[in-house]
Image 1 (cartoon, rainbow, N blue to C red):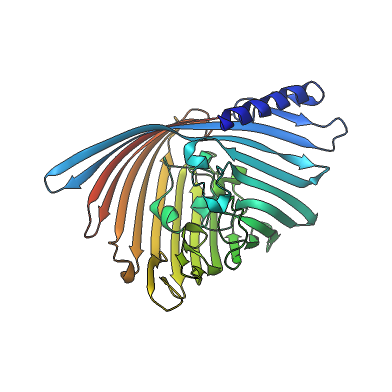
Image 2: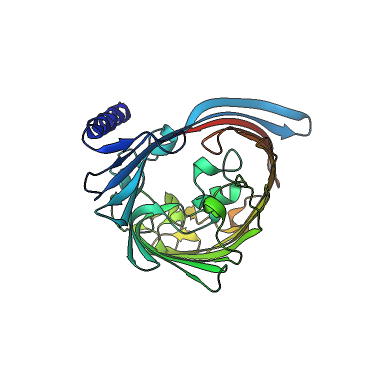
Length: 399
């Protein structure tokens, strides 16, 4: 009910604003409409997108497939507002999630309220190539996570991202780039965040989270920011390659997956330990061919949560490493065939078997990533566990 009311209010506000401001209705995929103040002191682009997902999973045993489970749901539904305020050098982005998947996770730490806000960030280009970000948004972690869920090459992100990503948080980021030569570009990002994820209202219960990222683009920028878009939909005429590394330290983390997962409580409040995550990734595109590779390594100073008397609470920091490799080719009819291999290996004390997932995907881009149908088939091999077979199909509509 609250979601419906919020949506109606936003649409009514937009309708009223249209009568007083310069506006235009862009072509499909470029937003619902664009607004600009009469004195050019502000702008706003309003967009919306939906993802409809169908999934079937089977357990794979020696006797064959069994225990089928199926589901159909609105996987994502988002409203997005972006533009500049007062000056083009001060940009902003506000993105709201509307589905149960988007807003789930209400707890005492979020004031028992749905987590509507995905991004609420301002970006100030205060000097030359320096940009200061303030607010809640994605941290500069692994590439696959930073790629928008609207621009994915397969139906969803990999197990590497699911197990080890650092997603969004509240804080500040400093971004900068410079050229070594005409084509060779270096991009840097540094972040200080609260360290407990998005929409947290209880304040900083542990320490702060520090993230640094360096990215090298020896052959120049990708067309249309393609280094953070799945597949080579621009069909790069010249080879484009990016190589990057991120290091994240969550000082005195109180959650079992750095700033994600569950809080680790003990007899005096919260168990705290330093959690570090290393990401190394690469992206390559050329004439419809694309390749992305990622590696993640997570460690903790003391991953076994304890009470004040050193007795174990049962909570454990999820540490280990993962490799993710994705490749695809876009045919001239805008059908793409892609494949992905992901390995996740956990540290021994977790007593969890290594996971190997093999995925084959088929996508039809009707209007690029703005209107597409994607499907994939995955086989998950779990060491000393039950293997799974999964089929998914998804329709993505992005105004």
